Length: 273
Image (tube, rainbow, N blue to C red; front, side, top):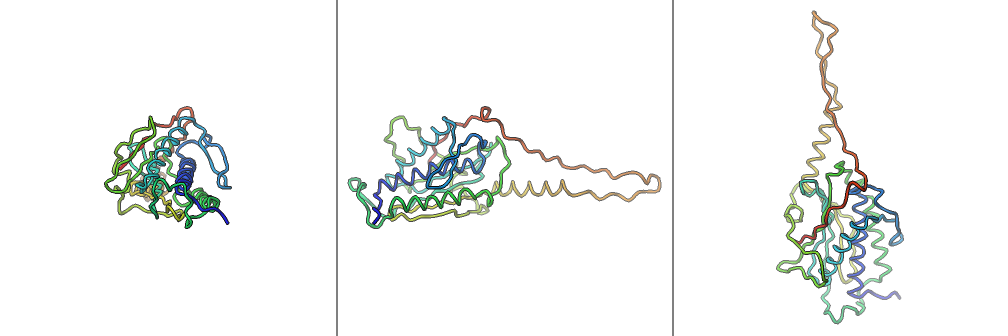
């Protein structure tokens, strides 16, 4: 019989998965050029990992900070926010956390009989990543080139503050409301990716398309439709039968991705609502 997880093993497993998922999100949503990433294997499935040392350090520091909050039991959400150059959220990848049982610190290395095993949890995470790798088919491409970036936010339980025990940990700063779930518009669309109940902590992953992104996509489609519509020619008059109707076609340009050397990752903000 497989050995059930302890509380600390569950926290380590979830934070490790979140780190892999962040790399995957940046690759799938093309936040950085594809050649910035290298193909790896995790949870018995192919994944892509950034090979940029500075970006990897930002993500690693963020995940360590997330782990500290997860251990306290006060963490409710982690969000990877895809934003435009005006710092406005376009997509939010939401990791929702729900602690199912309360365990004292001295008991967090004890196996929880109702919990799943580490191997079972790995299989669930494999399912998460398979779904995450297919999310572009549902969300489409944003076609924003260098005008898109990301940040990581956390949301805690009411009336709790982030705890920091690790020396030299980057500070938590208040997040822009529009980048958090509190800034969600009724016109936003939420897509569930996968969920798992470990028996200790529930984890679900969803992606939310904001009203700003959806509006931008509608306007882009309308502009493309206009550019493809041929103008109606005016009937020739008696004085000049060869005059052609004047028309103009909207010029739709797409800014290409820059070279890796030209696009350095911006300092990662660790934000808390």
